[in-house]
Length: 517
Image (cartoon, helix red, strand yellow):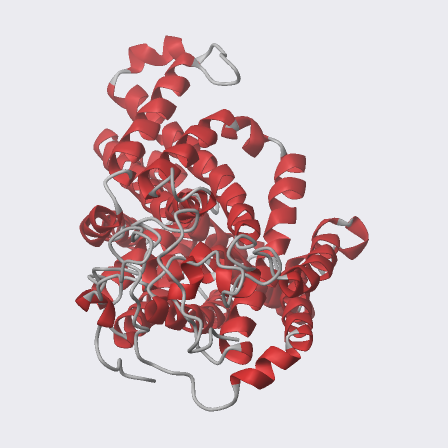
């Protein structure tokens, strides 16, 4: 289970180590930064439209709120579990995955996560670029002549807007995690709140308060409402599984357990549900004011037909898209690619690989094909549940929170996480059948009724299988409470010369014993 006192890991292996993958030296992400992280992620047009669409489909507003609150509460619990591991070890997701997958095997779940993130990074960049096109045409209508040709599926104006968004994000994202924290703290999250609250106030005033939040727009039966509510709960969790998987990328920078727990509480159950309330309120307001339910906030802004409102709204949602791209689709693959070749790729280079690949996949073509979206991204999504389960079962049930951080960077065949040639067969054995079941439920038409719940079956099966095949390891870990203190490590300051004793870093010693629950 862990390295014996007679065998301690030597200096970090250059095939497994660089400064960005090492345990966090600075821990500056307090409660507000974690809260701002969730504002950046949840204030996305897609989350707004999801909440609004449930209301339009026929769920009364109170059922929309109840379903989303139930789903995000499950997400909150999962984030706290994964945050505990990330905070204590101080390492990003692909390094944490070495404990369960092996020091080389961790590239399997890391690259699966990276492929999904690259696809969505490109799609979100392109979606933001369409807002840039609208903004440009509002300011300079004469440029419309450049918006009707096609070069590889995009107009000239579309290409310019896409590359402008690509360049803006690249300039932001290659500045590192600390710069990302500062930008999201003061820009990406709060600005969208201001816009949607202004929309809500405008529509309430225009409708003279004649907005109903209690009736079903389509008259759904009680049974249909219950089913739709359960689907909403499941899809809410499924949407956030990507970030559950790599939440260690952020929790590693928190100074104590309170920071990520309080930030998660305010940012997820409280903020997400409040944002959903406003989204439904605005959608109900569009029925009263415009005579139709509009659940795309950009279209609501266009309906108001005011150039100033259009410009401010477009800028706000451009900023929002950058925010979600940073949180959900950039940080993870930057670390994932760095983990593939740590000697040559750091966080910034991994990030640039992500950005370049996001152009090469031509996301406008990917997003325009419902078949490609369903089978490519749907299949990858079915893998997330099993991957999350393996990480959590390994950390909580198999190891009881006892991780040797130094051994995560050791390629020694006698190391704790080298397993069989650097791969853990038990993780593969648990993952493959679970992923196959989840993907089948998600993609085969005969299982349409179960498709929204596919991640549950995948997570349960992989967790059970991993616990069963790791029975002996679990017994060796013993019993007792999960430790709360930050795990000390000597892995810092680069690859030490052979025989050199690495110097202990005071930053890694961290708070002596962070507060528990």
